[in-house]
Image 1 (cartoon, rainbow, N blue to C red):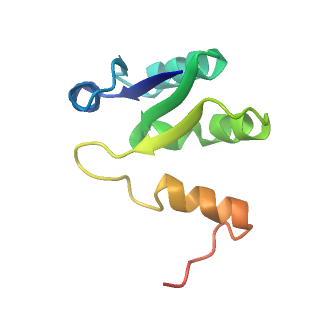
Image 2: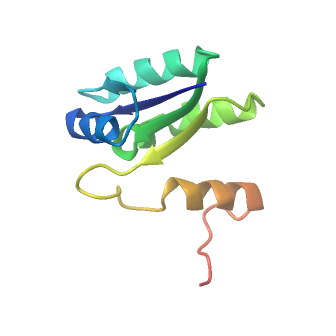
Length: 108
């Protein structure tokens, strides 16, 4: 299974330095969407790391992928060089959806 990172120039470079052999550099939301659609169809891809600023507009597409009951590829949002996009991180959001508490604050 392949691991592929999708992000801007900086994220693509950092992922390569971290050992991710395959990266797709995006300049805008449209190029990120096209890359993600292609990766979701590719059965040889196991993990897609996508920069959160590109993933946020693609939430409907990611939700559709989740409803398809396909295990792979697993899509994980990663923060860009300026830190995470405001709001919940992808992991917290996924836990809330699974637990049925989407939109509610978690008590810590």
